[in-house]
Length: 378
Image (cartoon, rainbow, N blue to C red; front, side, top):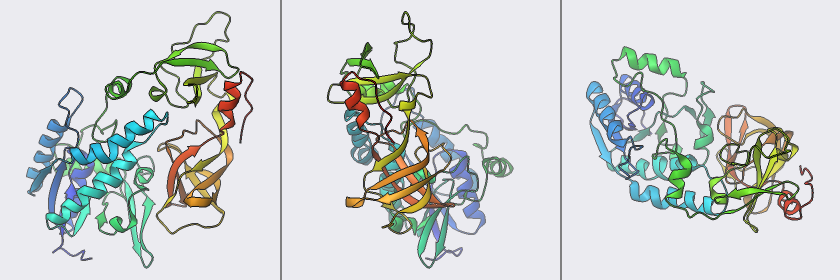
């Protein structure tokens, strides 16, 4: 692939500082840069910032003197990301839509749209490093570990990464903002975006209730005592403390309650008291089929694993299972392992790949249903 100044690169301009500086850096390197703004959520409500984001992207493109294209992949986003997001919640799991959004939209339909625009490369403002060598392109963690986004990128097809550039991989956030300020980019101090990919930050439970019905059921202690009523398993996640509305019970130990498990068969939410209750900690999990980014692993292997984006890597043994799944045994128990989230494996800074967490200590639910104290399962 030509990386000389004659190459055209299409940059996904979101209206934020990261993608703006990605475009700036590539232009300084001599690429022919064009911008692509994606608006993939079609609700015009108070929480949707797409209109303002587009104006910010236009201002950046104007300052950099580059063309800006605008496109909506709302239909593809709903079909490939949001419908699965809802299906996972209906199943009582906790999905991570940003992983699917990257694979299906940003490095899926948007990547291919960039080719239609004549792009030889597609670039984004992600914090990650792409290292090219004889074995192909490898995904490595960014220099700024606090901003590293490889957890969200592990499911992107390796072949698609061959034609991608991520110019921010060697920078820290403070350097990015300073580069934007010096270049006169109007978004240099714009706050980072948060919330669900393309949907934004909004009251999550109220948002979910627009699409999923309320299915009330019992909230039970680990010993089977009924403590209250939940509004539907879809609205809760393992480790959750807020919103249970079961505090202040007479004679109860004055510690907060946390979600420990979901019993789908009985539509029961199982809770325990104390952030460090033993039933919130587990030493092993099983994934679904693993998406390998650095070659398939067919034998047990020591590595480091993250089970959420903002967690540090945890030493573990990864054991391949049948049908492409993996069993991961941690050196130290991990808190609030959550079905539907992802376990992502690393070797040093290299992202090996990852898979959806499918099973964590299944005996927990059987114990709760029987009304007996639960055993800790590792």
